[in-house]
Amino acid sequence: MFTGLVEEVGRVSSLQDGVMLRLGISAERVTGDTRAGDSISVNGACLTVGEADGGMLTFFAMPETLRRTALGTLAEGSPVNLERAMAATSRFGGHIVQGHVDGVGEVLGVRPEGEAEIWEFGAPEAVLRYCVEKGSICVDGISLTIVSVGDGSFTVSILPQTRANTNLGALGEGSRVNLEADVIGKYVERLLEPREAESFSRGA
Image (cartoon, rainbow, N blue to C red; front, side):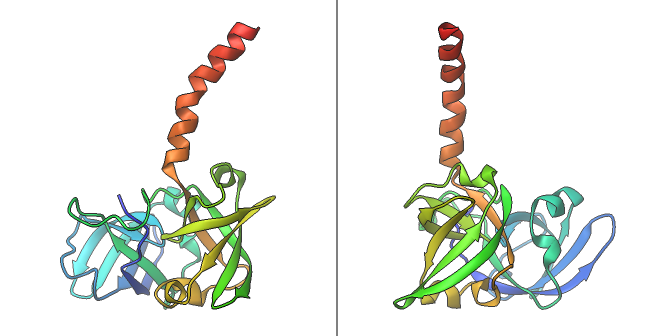
C-alpha cells in the first residue's frame, strides 16, 4: 500500500523490449534500503523490483501492465514519480493508494490560479464514477484533491511545491497519466450491490 506522497523523481535510464518490458530507473533516495522483491510505485503503478544495484532499480512490466497503464509511453530520460511501500510506523499523509491503475487519463489543459495551477484531466468513466468534489484521486502516483468533476474530466489544484517535486513539470497537454480512484468508493459500491439487487427483486 502507498500514500500518494512522492518520495523522489527518478529517471528512466534504460528500456528493453521483450516478452516483458525491462525498465531501468536511476534514483537516489528510494534505493537506500530497497531490495529485489520490494514493491515500488512507479508513476502510480505498483511494480516489483527485479534488481537493485546501487542507484539503479530494474523492473519488469508484464503485457497486462502495459495495456492498463501509461508506462508504455515512457522513454529514456523520462522523469517518474517513485514511492516505496508504506511502513506500518509511517505517518499517513496522503490517501490509501494501492498502486492498481484504474485507467489512463490525459492532460487536457493547465491554467494559472494565483500561485497555484488548475489542471484538467480527461478520464474514462471507470474512474470518473468514483470522483467527487473534494475527494481523493491518484494521478501518476500523486495524491491529489479533486476540485470539480465535469463531463468526461475532472480538475485538481496544483501547488508550486507539488509541481517542483513530481513529474508534473515535464507534462503538457496531451500527456497520458495513470489514474487510480479512491478505493473507499469502490468498496461502498460493492457493498450496496446486493441490497440494490434485492430491492429490485422485491419490486418485481
